[in-house]
Image (cartoon, rainbow, N blue to C red):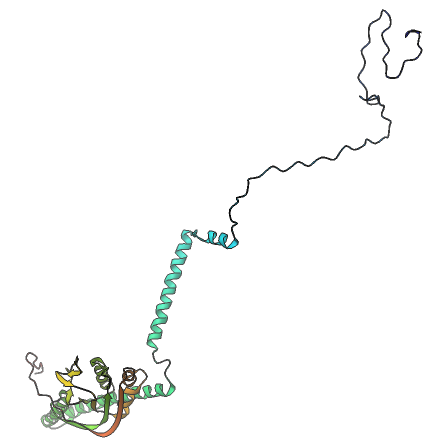
Length: 308
């Protein structure tokens, strides 16, 4: 039986051309026709899902250095130094520095002017009493001078009154110049220097402190202290106006004992300073001190009185 006489075609086979005819061109498959595999798609049948997507591998980054790891403290130090400062920050820092320097100088000067801040209450009271005594002494001197002026202006015999005041002034100037002896209440200061550690400047400071406290006549050992007295260091002792003086140094001072003794015993005063030099200072009050060391009266070479 030939192919032309077969009533059916086998599945998947294309009918051949008729005898003596033209071959036919196959049509493309339609959506409702069998696919490329030749299997028909039935309506309502779900398409099975495909395989899950495979994640792509990350791109290789730069390799990390194989050296030692940097700690947080090293990173902080690297961020702080070298400093990155702007011009405005420099100006502010300069202003703060100037302000701090001014405050420090002010505090330092205040501390220097408050040397007695740490003194005891009784020492402060003693210093105040000494200042009151000095003030009273100056007021008395002012009152005395005003009284002399009044006597000269109101005296019937002005010439006699002038001579009287001139003699009194001469006696006072003689005491100050050391040309006449003097006596009166005062103190005796004895400085014992066994190790010979006391120098000339310490004795000069003592003289200045006594004068500031109101001393009217001073004698050190056998030398009268006057306005031009000087102290200098010498081998094994001290020279006073060229005269050799050795320890113990005895100061005979005429003045008000209630003013002289506290002036030597104030905190940081003469007595404490000498004790730091490992010397001993003893102060004794007395109702009668005799200053009998005299200085020769010298006529000045160039200075002359300008009064007429």
